[in-house]
Image 1 (cartoon, protein in one colour):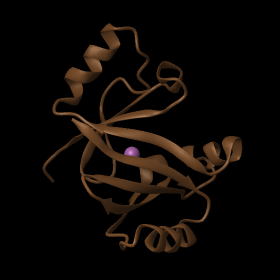
Image 2 (cartoon, protein in one colour):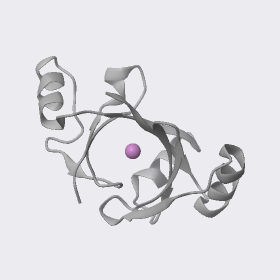
Image 3 (cartoon, helix red, strand yellow):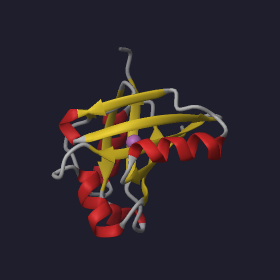
Length: 133
Ligand code: CO
């Protein structure tokens, strides 16, 4: 449907929030911890899309590993879809590698699934579908 958000991995969430509030000229409107992923998120509204800052909450976090390997920066691009299971089946049938077999609950009341970066020229793609809370 559209790009829902871009996810940016940051090593210091507090200072990154201050920086992005100044940079984007809009306050962080929501923070949310996703304990299962070891991640704390901070959201900024930018038109029809959002910016999601991602900080690690523990050493085993995917974000801690990402930053250790590649440094801070763009982590993923998320596309809103109407039916995440249908999109996952469509991509799987075309030979794409999904990083999770079933959609999982992510931040922002969304079901999410990731596509392996090797299948998208190095970009980690997230599919997300809004669910009613
Ligand atoms: Co995301």
